[in-house]
Length: 146
Image (cartoon, one colour):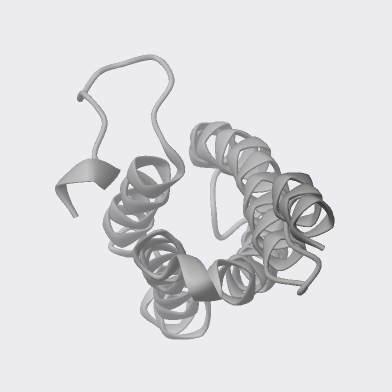
């Protein structure tokens, strides 16, 4: 997991670090909520944020299943964003906290989009090399042997 961490305080953190920091912010924020709101919104937001951390870690650790875990990350992150928007609309999250939290959300959104494209291109490249056709060099060698 050490590779997932970027230098603390760097302006541009990685997805893992941003997801983890978002989860920590939501954890602290949940204590400022009324008890009923904490149960309905705070716990669910924190749970989804932790799922996002887990999804990205698995996507990073298991390259053969990267697309699957990245899709789960996108799905869980979308649910988290909608829940946070609803909490803000209901004034459960203050505008000040909302702005701070959505700075993380914007960075994570951008990073996940890039990571998804990277993961899909890696899978397509691997599928292209394993499609049975082989490389051009192999086909050329076959032609010279025949």
